[in-house]
Image (cartoon, rainbow, N blue to C red; front, side):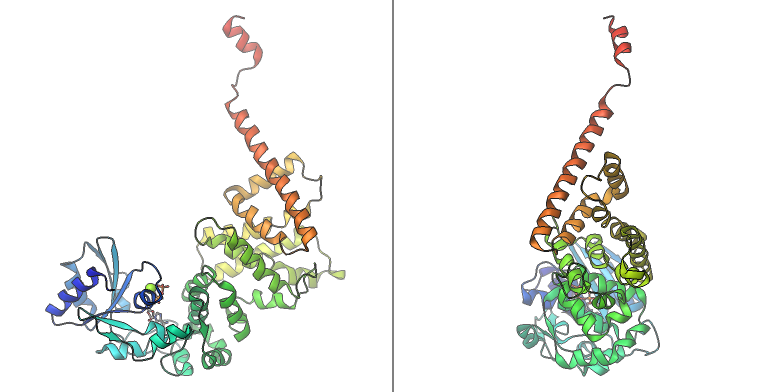
Length: 416
Ligand code: ATP
Ligand code: MG
């Protein structure tokens, strides 16, 4: 099935003597039966020529990606990105892939990250082009590089992270040879810019199976470079002895948080779950006897989360929200029964502010990994806390609509 809008543009390109093909994500996803995708297309026309063609055809167009060969267009409800054929050309020392245009679809496909992303459909002929066995890999649900993984990851080390991202997003495994190359070449990821790393990590965390992607990162040693807090959790014995390490606890909390999402992936909640205990290793080691106050751990953890997300160049709101959740999730455990005074509850609500709903989810997720009896008790205590929060909110609403006048003044005005 090819969208008529793509065929239409294919006719326009053909009339001008240019090739056009659907490529990458949309081809892969149609074959997987995954829903609605923006249309990625590739052509031999140079960006200026693409722009000229698109100008007369699209409802709107944009040129932000033009220095990388991409022209964007909107036609009706469809968003299209048309990228000029590229040939393999990366400067191993540069942080940004260098752009060199190519002349054939085959050469363009050869420099793509994985065989499943290196399939194309020529327009308007619908000829299916799959030189690297993408369809076979799709059936086997495996990620394999078109050439050798060493060459591919050497050309652009970001592809190692993309492997982990697609493992989370598509639930595919990564070919053994590629995993070996990731292990050997992990430190090369250091030359890639923080922005590109952030995009892939974020898609990994927001995918349906982040455990698969994170496991790959940790086991290949990539995590030590892009999320060093994570593998460090492995050295920590979980205080509740439910899991062999805080790392496993963290993955479960992430999954429990995801299970509570109402509508689609919640980036802030997921990152907060992932980073909620990063303050633990440090605080434990630094304290004699290994015991630290909850408050200390909260603050250190929040600072560490903030540092990691700012280094990854996340937007400020995301960074601050995640750090705030990491800080507040422990307050619940810090208070014993009966210590939640009205003012403590009010402070909790005020400090959580717009994050209250996520804080509930994160705290509950964190409770589930205790033993059954303890988890049930914690959950009951949290139910009570939520009820009190609701009651206080109601009282405050009532207080708001109560008139400013006191009884005497009202009597006076009414002459009673
Ligand atoms: P989605 O957009 O659903 O996340 P996608 O496969 O479209 O998935 P993009 O990051 O949008 O992923 O990339 C579009 C296509 O460009 C990919 O399918 C792949 O063929 C190619 N590609 C992207 N980044 C790289 C890279 N670093 N090296 C090689 N090819 C790449
Ligand atoms: Mg895409």
